[in-house]
Image (cartoon, rainbow, N blue to C red; front, side, top):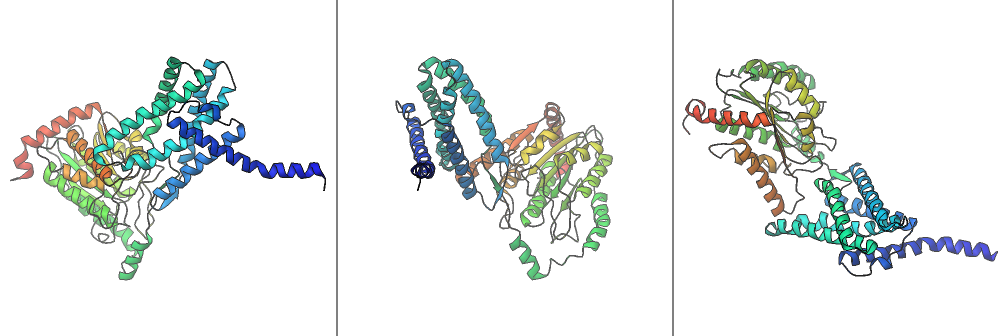
Length: 471
């Protein structure tokens, strides 16, 4: 055997082994930086290969941990975009560092240092912080933010050897990276197991739906529901309510819509001006389907019944939300169209409805706000654009968000902004106590809507006997 050929082969075989050992050493350097240990940078192995290994290790860590912690995980490309933004931030900060050190070689060293520490930051922020006891949660996040700044400062100081410059760079780094804290880094979103639900329906024969009959019955069901809606009274800010339970695979959405409608009728004076659209086998013969077309027709009808300058529509939608910000509309075995934020906006605009309270109880529902927001709207969502909400189960009467909202409706006198804010707080407290990743409900209120709500609340008190009877 040719000796030179043998040496080359052995070198190629030992390369992965040497790179993996260098990876372990660099991760050890990362731990030393996290502990603010001196001379840590002197031990780092800097190379393009090591940067690729560290990026791969970080990505694999995120992929694995987020998979383990996500119920019924479904793959989502969002995580790749998040990693890309992180890399751009690291490149930007590395550019600043090299301008201060006047050494272009420090860019690669800085990137290697960043990815020596990021896997540990991820593990702490994704696993440890969300599971802190409720009484220590705020303190824990505050301490974590200070510690992250100190690690940034210490890492940059190793390269710049100047405290003021290092502090300035660390501050810029923290500011630039802060917007990413509004999203959870994950390659997975929560799916739902419909097989058990459908098996239950199959056992009792209820899955045998006459699709043609259901479709043709919609006109009569919707006509009956809309004919029961009374017009608004001139000179009074009246509230009209539509509940939309979009997913027939779980009873919780039907239950929630019915309970919220009852509370809005009794507490907010919408009796005689409310209707529900529900997808569920239990109501398929008595209640109009929660379909995109039925919602459009209903909003058009309300737009003609109400005084659009005075009255307000309260639209409550609950169901499963998707990562691409659509509300899933499902009623097996029927084929129904999902509902997008633009669909809702178009239906409200076409109906001429000016004043709008839109509440969306679904995962990722914060993604609806951008398309729906205007000066005449209040939009309240169960979760941030890239966060899941909780409580979607047949064992529950409400989702976590729906229950908090329902309880807030019990407060008297009712005030929309403070009551919705209280519901947000209750959701957060419950998630913390159950050690769940925060869903971060979102609340948007247009400036003109703030003034309109004051008038609505005044009329609710002024006309309480007529609207609510004895309470």
